[in-house]
Amino acid sequence: MAAIKLSKGTPINLSKEAPGLKNLTIGLGWDLSIAGGGYDLDASVMLTDENDKILGDDSLIFYNNMISADGAVTHTGDNRTGEGDGDDETIIVNLDKVDPRVHRLHILASIHEGQTTGKNFGLVRNAYVRIVNDDTNEEIARYDLSEDSAAAPSVLFAQVYRHNGEWRFKAVEEPFSGGLPHILTSYGFTV
Image (cartoon, rainbow, N blue to C red; front, top):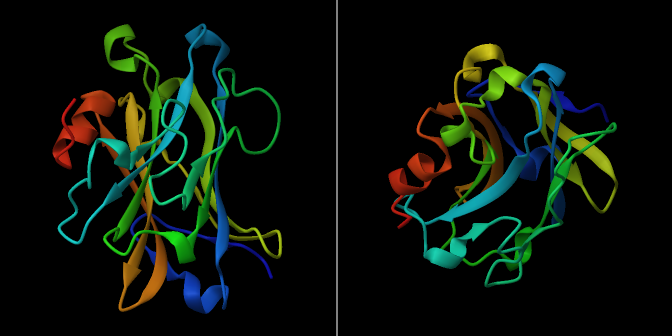
């Protein structure tokens, strides 16, 4: 099965594209521009309820809070350089374990301290997010970041969400010029 190449705003039904999907990896990759000097990108997942508000302070899964309270979402660690091929940071999700109060998993990427250092996604090349079925090791879908986010230090890349009892994946690419704190506070997180 060839991976679906997504367009911004287009959802796919994971339950139909990968019947029986239980375990998935969300992979994010990028290359850093040499002109930008040293900087670090960070992937994270924010868990929100049916009203799209964060469930609590422990509902942001990132390099400093690597496992969700329900054990369903695990961040595998921080890659500080973005060097090499393939995924730079990954998040593993067991869909069967996701707390029933969680309706959306927002997949975020931000440049560490990008807002204060003036670094933005204009310095990032070949950024993408993809979903892989861990049980078959097949890539289900992929979205390549466009130039629309070049001026922002943080981007809401995509969402995995429940819809009528099924899991879906949608490329969002919503840039946030206020950085990660702006994203988090807009979903009710206290920074």
